[in-house]
Length: 61
Image 1 (cartoon, rainbow, N blue to C red):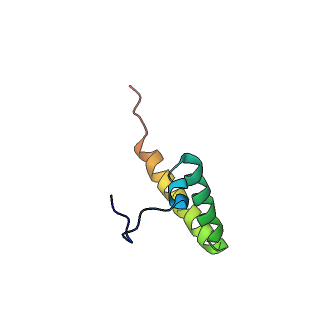
Image 2: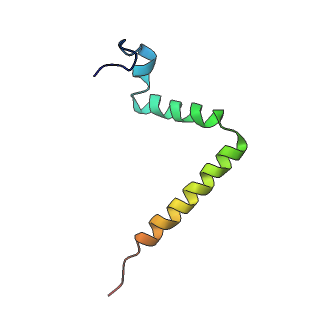
Image 3: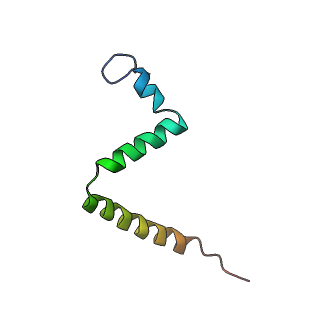
């Protein structure tokens, strides 16, 4: 698969494809967010979790 710039991916980009590298990238992106952005994301995730929880209720016989 061709890289978007036409150049092969750098070693740094390949490091992000591991579990550890992906986690470090997620943390790096999270730390760049403002407090307001973090709170908005947490609120959105709570709403999503509530909707998923409601959809997973199993009826008892």
